[in-house]
Image 1 (tube, one colour):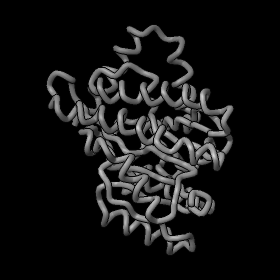
Image 2 (cartoon, rainbow, N blue to C red):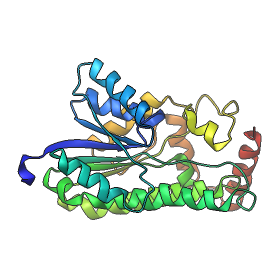
Image 3 (tube, one colour):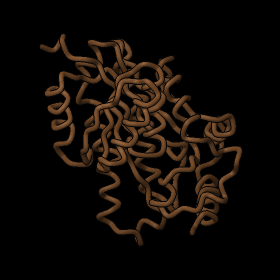
Amino acid sequence: MTGEKRPVTLITGASAGIGAALAHEFAAHGHEVVLVARREQALAALADAIAAKGATRPTVLRADVARIDAAHDIAEALAQRGLEPDIVVNNAGFGLFGDADKLDRATQLAMIDLNVRALTDLSLAFIESLERRRGGILNVASVAGFLPGPGMAVYYATKAYVLSFSEALHHELAPRGVRVTALCPGPVPTEFQARAGISTETFSPLLTRSAGRVAADGYRGLAEGRPVVVPGLANKVLTTLVRFVPRNILLKATDLAQKSRAR
């Protein structure tokens, strides 16, 4: 029966970086967590680390959320365990550095599939249980979502989608008691940069924030029902200023910044 299911916080891309930090943050606040990613060994180690702190040991689900049937399979796996989400955290995603016409096209399309389609699917798949439990959705976007992104055109565009979609969903679902928050961090030292092919040495310390601090900011923002959370004062100032800077100047500035980070 639906009423007998236990509420859980579902976190995708939980094996490392911001996803792992979010898992620790939610568990520390008493949430039972379900960890979803492809790397089962890393998820098991994270589950052990969370349990070692005295929290309920998270459920580990090995899954590729980019698969077309991932949301259905995850829902089924949760139901079999007597679980249902009261919070969905969409953190899975990746970026690629380089000009769009020079990067592998199939990989860029796979980025869109993960960063956009899968996030949308999982955001909408559990609305019924989120509404019943007055829960929420935390979508990990980026400061990149506020900017045009030459040098990472497709990645920046996917994060602009996440930001826009999350803000609209926040407005639509608020009357039903479901909170939706877009978490938009600036640079965070994680394996994301290595996969994307970016050097982090040129990032300003003012803009950089640890995964743990970003996770804490995201948790607090969702709890407060804020539509958008930009961690760090410098990043808040940056995302405010871009609204007043002509688009052609932003393009040139972003292009120069990206070229300085080429590895």
